[in-house]
Amino acid sequence: MAGDTVPEAPRAPTIIPVLVILALGIVLPFLLSSGFHLRLAMLVWIYAILCMGFNLLYGYSGQISLGSPAFYAIGGYAFAMLQTMLGMGPVSAFVGSLLLVAVLSLLIGLPLLRLRTHYLAMATLAFMLVQNGVANRWINFTGGQSGVAVPPLEWGGEPIGRMGIYFVILALAAAVFILHDFLIRSHLGRAMQAIRDDETAAQALGVKVTRMKLAVLVLSAVMAAIAGVCFGITSLRVDPSLSEFHVLVSLLTIVVVGGLGTRFGPILGSIIVVLLPQLLHEFGELETVVYGLFILLFLLFLPHGLSGLLERRDWRLRRTGKKPAPAVARDLKEELP
Amino acid sequence: MLMKLSYLLLAGLTNGSVYGLIGLSLSVIYGSSRVINFAQGEFVMLGAMSAVLFMVTLALPWPLAMLAMIAVVIVAALALDYGVYRPLTKRKAAPLTIMIGTLAAAIVVYGLAFLLWGPDQKFVPPVLSLTPVRIGFLVTNTQQVSLIVIFLAFLIATWYLLYRTRFGLTVRATGVNPKVALLMGIRSERIVQFSFIFSATISGVAGMMVGPLLGGHVGMGLLLTVKGFMAAILGGLGSPFAAAAGGIAIGMMEALMAGYGTSLYAEPAIFVLILLVLIVRPYGLLGDYEAERR
Image (cartoon, rainbow over all chains, first blue to last red; front, side, top):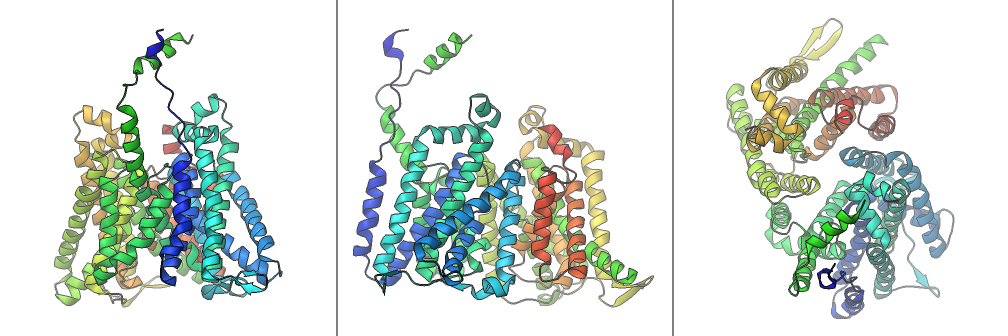
């Protein structure tokens, strides 16, 4: 085979865009004037953390689990209750809530992950509704509608200001974001995509499907719990609204608007979903209608989401040089016995 | 003792009929297009709220009001077909994307209904009388009984249409494989359109009939969609009859749980039960049909 027909191997995506986004995140609070804007910025990161977990689970591994809001809420509740009821410090409560969610998601994932598609979606949705129902009803334990207060974060005896909390959240988001990006670019990300595209084929190629699916479910649940803890330290209160239906709708909207199975989709989608209602305030009563129409327009004209738009442009630039030779792939196949 | 049980069973049957009708309509759409329509509950809401509009505000007699209500839900179904389903399938969107599209459509419908009817609970006028009627030792009313009758009527109509007519054969063929059906000269798009219209009509009628019992509210759609979805999953998504049976099962469980257990935890307990059923039978109670096809 002539050497020049071998296409250049696609270069691994660089980490530079990740660093750029994080740098923007560091600069951002200094550009915002009001506390309200800073709160919106925190919400963007919180939703981004939640949706990165969902992106790994659905966008990359193809397991549509609608249970993320439940883990989000459980993470927040556990963080608050470990502090108020057991008197733990914030760091140990953080670790404890993540461990709790990890164990819980493992227990739920073991029986449920053999379900497929809509059945898995329904089962995990049922799990979310159970969690929400219990949080609403078990008033002595969860505080019912009013929820549980989260003790404010302290540093050296003094409560941390808004700016400090923003940077705590940014640090957690950065850790999740880098992990998310690392997984996608590594062989593990390709294993997840193999599972999404064809489980049997993936198994035949040596991917440990069950173990992988469980690992991704636990990871995404832990990410959701981190988001829940972040919500707790910004709002100083967790209540059943964390696992209500509108969170799920936001979650689905974010991954679709941002782009399913893309590197930056969750972050771009979170920016849109958090900021859009603020921009739509001037429509007054029409707000809900415009919001729905906006999502529809996104689905129609940007089917791969915002991140898909960016990655496609990237792809086009790369293709301007030499055309890839699909013949090579066929040659390779024919060489196989 | 027996009295209480039979009352609970009757209540369960009535609620179950509504869930069953929604499950049936979800399954009809799923059968032809592989899409879970998250706007299905909005059709029920439109049915109930249109009854308020036509029977109270415009004071039409009920047969005319029902026709007008069916016209409203058909317009909504066509809007869903032309505005969401077709453009998205043309762009080769994944089923989840289309599902989110129907969710967005549900948000739009909810927003429009909110503008029209406002946030308050509305009294939906009964088509039949709400005065108590005795059947044996049970006291009920014709509105309640009519729901069960309508449920059975639609069940039989769907069965006849799908399994005893040539047209039903084309619908089922589209469900099995739309491309091959297209090659056989079946216009798959029209079949999908029909399934949207048919299921919207079922849900609209269900909404108009259950409105007087539940009360009409513009936000009632979502929970009904979830219950219908659960019914369809519990029975088995592949067949409309399994979905309908799932609805009855959920209605019964709800009533029995509220009657003998705690009514406070009735809802979470049912979701736990559904989780357990799915763990034991991953394709729903009667889901072998779809499991076999894989």
